[in-house]
Amino acid sequence: MERNAYTGKNITVFGLRKSGKAAIELLLKNGAKVFATEKSAEIDSSLIIWLEELHVPFELGFHSRKAIENKDLIVLSPGVDPRIPLLEEARILNVPIIGEVELAYQFSSSTFIAVTGTSGKSTTVELIGKIISAHRNNVYVCGNIGIPISEIITQNQIQSSLIVELSSFQLETIQEFRPKVAVFLNFSEDHLDRYSSMDEYFNAKKRIFNNQTNNDFALLNADTPWLMTFELTRPKKYYFSGLGSVDKGFFLQNNHVVIREEGYPDRFVNLAKYRLKGKHNLTNAVSAIGASYLFLGKEFDIEKTEKAIANFEGLYHRYEFVGTFLGVDFINDSKSTKPHTTIVALQCINKPTILILGGSDKGNVFNEMVKEITHNPYVKYVVITGKTQKKIRSAFEAVNFKKYKTTPTFKSAVFEAIARARDGDTVLLSPACASFDEFRDFEDRGDFFKHLVRSIYSNS
Image (cartoon, rainbow, N blue to C red; front, side):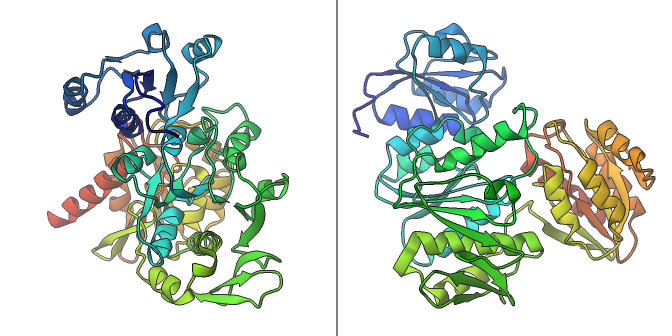
């Protein structure tokens, strides 16, 4: 987009979290007149001072008609539902509505790898970033992982390689966004508090491929039935698998990732020095290597890739080892905000384990997770907390599983788990739920868990 395209335009930014703030900065830098609206009545005082210093008018606690009247454009943060009545009214007024991802893309000359899926996105984009950085300069990991794309674009006008994690919410509001490589990691039940059905959720996710051409690449998980049932006509389609081989793509074999292309001999990337545990992390490595290979083409170097993989330590709050205290291992998997990811965590345990479950409700159904728990020989006991505890307890009662206890707060759940743990056991925080009943986000919950555990044992 021309740099002066938004100069003098009246633009509203909905949402004043990280993405909204970054969008405001990008718009101001390009000469727009910005109005900001935030439904929460409370935001950090530093953000209020920042808005006032930049002379950006704003409203808190509601979205008023002022946010849509006489506006040339509306930019949505990912947490804002594009179907709220005020935005439907804006469409009647013919006000264009885009998301922060689309805004950033319009001002960017960079090349994108985009990753979506129900789980594993953050680990995968970070690993892709490490691999691409081993081959190129000016590589940035951004998007839903916590760094808005607009922030990167504002600060770096040079052409870069951007590795972007995208949620379904962000994909709802793209228009022209086009990644060179689009990765769909997996698909399972989630966000049914926002979407009316799994089909609606899936349709939002698959928008990642909407603008790709026959010069671009789509990388799909061959182990996910949903991803084998829809047609893609424009991008070049490749598959990856953690369970078996594929005819064209990437798969695991004897602790190696096999790169298989028609007309070429197989190539092998050694995972012997890969530090992350669990089958899911091996599959994440397959997808990351596949995406990097497709993105780099002839630049792809196996030795550089293996070195990047060996140096990758994983992310906080994703099956993160906290420490061993009086013979008990503690694992922080606070990022598990859905039953599917807790099932994956349970497949990694190999010691008697006290599991901490529960949090705020995203409309999830816990039946499959409960079945996994009842059949897992290592689950010693379950402690349940949060707004979902009645729902989870009902699922346990339906299968006559009695090895659980409910607690009134997250802190009391941790104390209960520690009281029941013995030398050789593991305490696993893998809540299967969002954190918004007691915490700001999953990082806040995970940090509190780590601090609480360490403080308890430092005083013992």
